[in-house]
Length: 242
Image (cartoon, rainbow, N blue to C red; front, side, top):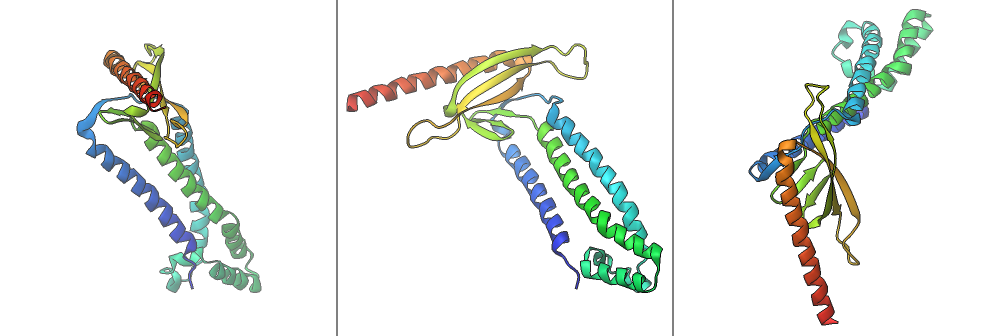
């Protein structure tokens, strides 16, 4: 009986990753009318590493194909429909035993090489390809500043959680015509509210277009000013209760 565990695992991983991307894009479409501005795309270390992963996946695919091609030729004509048998350890063992008993050394070597390196290359190809695609998708996805929250790669920051911001370096990029200039922006926010306080203070880095800097600076100052007033009110109410 064919062992489907490996194949099912691959399919599940691919479907889960594809599902996450589709859900993310669907949510971005849902909030399209709430977007105030978007950050720019930059070539960063994550994008570079993701591209390297894709290159490695192609290398693994090359080596796997050559090993797979050799063993696939050994299948009997009536076994050609049993492609998935090549993922079944028992079937591979029977092939190896068959060639061993008949002292067919080249065929035995082909089966053994497939068992030793073929599956490893296949698994490595899939993992690096999925990792690379996810990385490229995440790196090219623009952060969004919306009416209800700020959506960055790994967090959703409600406006009421923002507690500060700081403008950083301006990258002119005149030496790279295809790269847009941008301002670095660091947003400080409280991650989660707890019973004992506001929660953990975190930060998020954004890349803002020069044309959006002035408007965003005004918006953030209003948010911080409003938050400070709310904190003063809450403190006064607490003092009165005490």
